[in-house]
Image 1 (cartoon, one colour):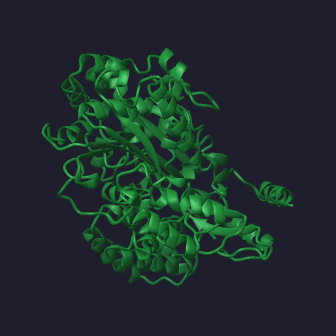
Image 2 (cartoon, rainbow over the protein chains, first blue to last red):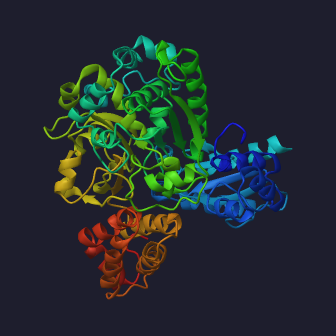
Image 3 (tube, helix red, strand yellow):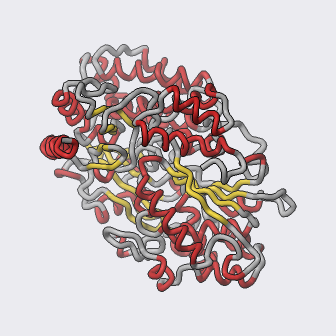
Length: 146
Length: 424
């Protein structure tokens, strides 16, 4: 990935994404490895890794659920939806379920306001959601993982 | 309905798939590129875009023709063209819909822009939430390359232009031009204050043209049909072209509608979007994304173009119209928008980093019934300070707050006097 470009660090996000896709998150070891490839110091890469929403510096669940909390999803009942999701999974925002299946994170407007309220599961959009369709979604994710 | 107006960008939109390369060519796609390449002279492309008064569709409304001309003829190589597909402004999803409809229109527009400044490298900067669009673009760029429409020796000429897709890690500030340049170079995406401008010293200190998806997509049509045709598309004499309006909130049919600039707001809401949801009353809208100001029913019939909105102290922005009804608490809505700006501030300069959390706190207290009358002047003071920031993020972010104070002070006072949200 870095071999074909004149400035290795321009590939920083792609390299991090590749490592994250493989290991689930960007561990300290992955970060050090990536920094070496990108000809950056680990600190320089850390500066990027902690800046971006979609880079995880801690282990996350098999399904990372990003719940949009921006204005249109908020107005269309997103708050109740998120409260229901968290209660059902028994976690708070930012946490991962004990079985390692689900992590729920808040996210700014995901650009699906015509399908509000919407969420992303591993970057794939679902919406407009109701409590019932959200329940069905969680059930099907659980089944897929079993 | 938008179908009653001339369709340019979404004329051949399919309900659930892209227009293929073959179909795009059947509809006249890549003929603009072919004629320009055959002619070999970039000057007419620059001239027609300047005459067309194509204003940037990504929010700022800067004339695309002027931007092109700021790349000096003797500027160093390599030169870059960046397509900003990072739309992250709450309420904005027009580029997503467009990219899932007409990827080749963007590829052709980008290549034409590149040819006009003799750029050799193209990059599409796209937000991570649009992974499906990123994959579509990579695939279609590959097909265009096989067909000799991008890449080396375009259409047998000596001109070459390659396009790659760059996935962002996801932060709103990356939509800002100078921050995007930093992001592309693998640096922390802090905005930089120009000069130098990107067209002078952008990526790796080389000339870099950055335009929004929709702006670039207009270019093939302007090249094919001319500047006057483009101007005549708009309903108001000062405006030019159509606009992709993305409407969301309390309307029956939210979505993206291609309409002439200058179309009335009321036409968009009633004819295109099927009116207000559940028979509710229109209370206000943000006419162009989260960094514009609330516009009340007083301007329900306003012509939606850059000039008309400027005249009433607002902005067309990205054309993202978010509609609020009379059941919606404007303090709570503004609190939500302020939360967005507080979270997405890059943190580089102090007024923005500190100001938005402070504003969020004050608005939150008012919303929760702990507000006091002297908070209103405090909010005004902080908003004034937020105009002194490094980039346009904060002046945009105070748009909703300042307009809340201007149009809904009675609603704020009701919260303070009743010590609760009257809508709760």
